[in-house]
Image (cartoon, rainbow, N blue to C red; front, side, top):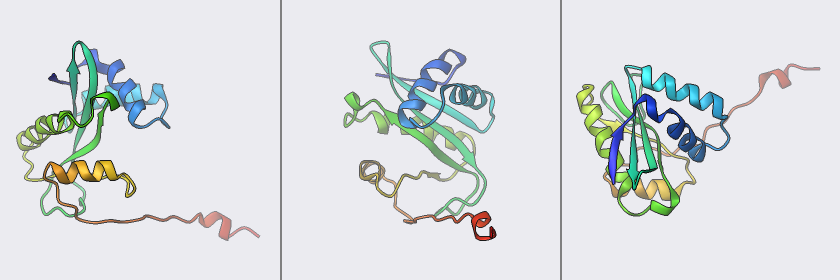
Length: 151
């Protein structure tokens, strides 16, 4: 298995993997997102490949806004991490995080952070296994104010 840094030749491949991780998204929007990431000085992706088949990716970004549980800024942030189900539990996720950590160091970060859904026990276990500390658990709420003000 090899890890490749994101390049223009990966737009379609990365978009297809984005949709596997976030199936509610739209292809055209995610393709444009791939292009935006490539042209961004504060974001990047790394892709895992085996036998000429891409099997996973990590999307990294610099976050300067307050990041839960961190004490420095900017923070290297894992925006997305995906490994094809047939290749999970083989260390590929950890191998994808490694260049993300190195990228963060090169970008002047002292910390790396991530998040997951509170119900995603596989992701929580993965993060814990590779050395992340859980810093908070939250459930977020919203309320539509327009409905309150209608007669």
